[in-house]
Image 1 (cartoon, rainbow, N blue to C red):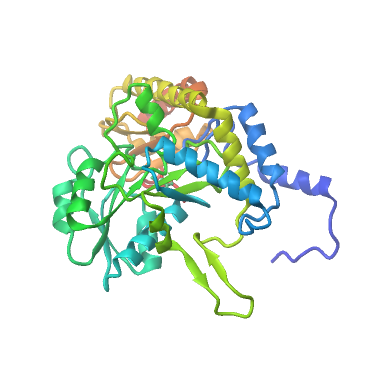
Image 2 (cartoon, rainbow, N blue to C red; image 1 turned 60 degrees about the horizontal axis):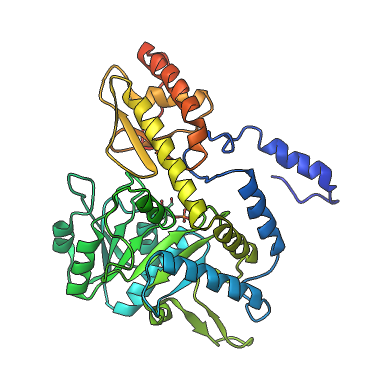
Length: 408
Ligand SMILES: Cc1ncc(COP(=O)(O)O)c(C=O)c1O
């Protein structure tokens, strides 16, 4: 086991050691993965880094000390609320990521309902973070099979609601397939039963509005649907901010009280927080603010355009292969599979991996999952060239099969 060094080491050597440690990592900057990263260009990378460094050590728990951060956080929340058509009186919290935003929403739903044996009802395409939140919070997760379009089956979800139900969930879009659930119908169901409806727009919050502007048809998913209570939207995904930046937005500021902790049960006086984190990095807020202000609507539209261009090129290139099929979709998530038993998708995955692509293996259907971001427009042809080689190799039957479901 490594022990703390007896004497500290110089930074140049440590920096080199850090760079050396990265040499076997997959190259996100060359677009070699379609998961875990979001990248536009070096100009935006510099802005992310410099903005973060401007507040690199400030603690956003201490907003009395740093009114700057309170103001920046407020502006980030307001810009997101306006993007998602929130009504007057709506509010939001800046969190560390989609998981924290979702955990807070589920906590608030549970606290508002105050039921003895709470459950939530969601399509089985909802992110597993909901099950994780349920596990932490003592809530029963009820996953309901999606319909033939792989979208929320609202009638089946209605049948799963009972006296213990505290919330419904819909995704905009879901991560496995990129479909936007039937949020309007879920809103009606939520209103009928007085339930909290959470829309998970961790992926779509900062992309859906711009896809719509490009003419991509998406069903209504945001606060324009009256029954929507809260939305999670990740700035560190298609909001293009560095990691550690998400939002939980609520229709009415009063709802935030349900995920607010406050106590004076120790010697040090009152401690209060809306988030799971105590100490919060000021850099994450500053960088998110700077990225949003720098990109503006025009910049996000450009990101959306590049993603759709990447999707069109890659989907068309995959479809050229007899025996490969791209599942229907119109979002940044793209799934393809093999329809030819002589062309196992697991072998294609192995052959792509050998060429430096980190492959996310979809479990169901047995396939390959891509989460596209702007950089993929530049590497789409390289991907297709390597796919051609991978298909040839897979047909020869030499490569072992990468197991299905291998995503993380
Ligand atoms: C739809 C969706 N919801 C929630 C999450 C969880 O977000 P995070 O990894 O930022 O905690 C993800 C992450 O990929 C996601 O795709």
